[in-house]
Length: 246
Image (cartoon, rainbow, N blue to C red; front, side, top):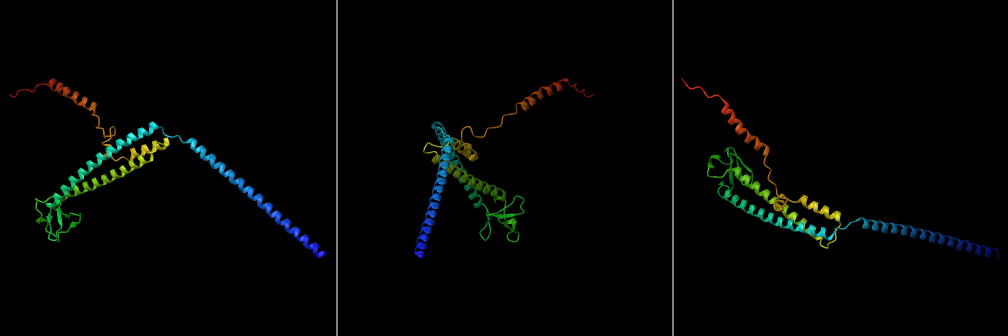
């Protein structure tokens, strides 16, 4: 009987321990749920506060921005066409220079400097005197300075063309971003300013109001120069006449 009592007592302690364990689990689960609810509520409040703080651009502002984009697009196309014409013309001039260049026995087309002390091939590699007698290159062949200036200008034009194309892509991205007619006002102003700041000079030259303005004449200098004339004339008039030769 004693052992049987001990057995039931042991079962009671086991059941009580399991009950306590389940109670602790429920308490912990409830606390976790409460903490999760607090975090979710705060996130919703933050999102709501952010949404209320964002001021959307008006329909008029979006439309005005699109009008500016259209003008930038038009100027970009003009700049691209103009640059391509300059590239084509430069390439024609370079081909002409190469056609009139002195050709070495190994086929290299070379240009002598104006002072006649150096010779360079069409790729800018210097030709040594032991490779070529410089006197063989007559004055009928174009000089290296002209060829170098032309190739440098062509490289700059091609770089300019790349900048214009990159800018065109930025315009396309800006148009896509504002396509749905909804855009934060601050972001729209920043986007507009960025496009203006990134605009290549070749493009701005074709945008009304952005083209370079000629410097104003120095009116003060003009007035001073004009006033100096009568002063000189008065001085000459008041000077004594030279005595006649005897």
